[in-house]
Image (cartoon, rainbow, N blue to C red; front, side, top):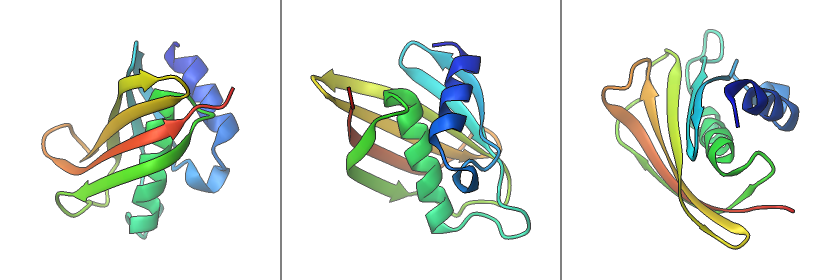
Length: 123
């Protein structure tokens, strides 16, 4: 799926309050790179980071997919800058997709969060 199509599908399936100005930078095969901007004036709360995790995992697995199992490791504090999410499909098994995402503050240098998940694909 090309970036513009994924962008449109994510905007359609993600509530406005949870989008954080998401922008699909790259979408290749089973790897996706999405940028999110922080909520104005407040930085990244844990709830906001989990929303970013959910959106970035769905970007890789399929926008209609829903998380059934989630493991999150926080590696460092989130900075009040854009987040870059690098997500990929690890394995597909019938209607279950196993994925991972890495979140970075502003640049892809040191990850601040890593998540793995299983998602159920509707359809």
